[in-house]
Length: 194
Image (cartoon, one colour):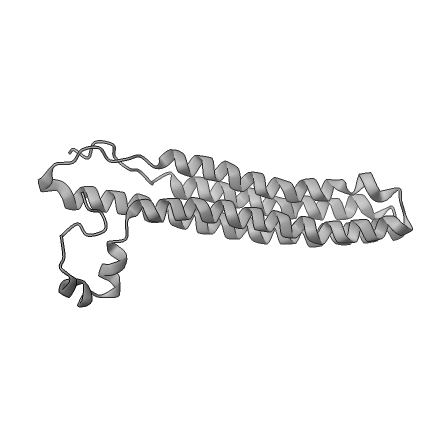
């Protein structure tokens, strides 16, 4: 089946197609894999951004107070967890994608619609998981940066700020939970027979 052109449109018909029709005929597997890539890439960008923010302050603060060096590495670990959330979601999402091996000619519309729903579902899962992990990584990085600076000045503030950092890290976990709920409806039927 030619997923990109299931109705075998001519060049003239493609030129007169609306934007909605053009988006409708983008391969569902493209949407799926693009969603997986978004979840992975933006989660990793969020983690690296958070590590960058935290690391700079941590290194600068250890000049004044070398004792905070190992204690404040917990902030870097929280940032790294954000990338792991993206990898976990990528594995879950890629497990949903299956190649459609057979379909009856009279049910091509139903098979294509089912595949398109699965593709869109995985795409938007990738967007929501990726954005939540991007924001989570930045939030944990900024909080970890403040934690390192505050701990260098006043050691009693470390545990209090660490609690705030834990709640910031939970945002990424919420994104993973929402992503699991979103992609639970995505399905590619191996044999599209009703």
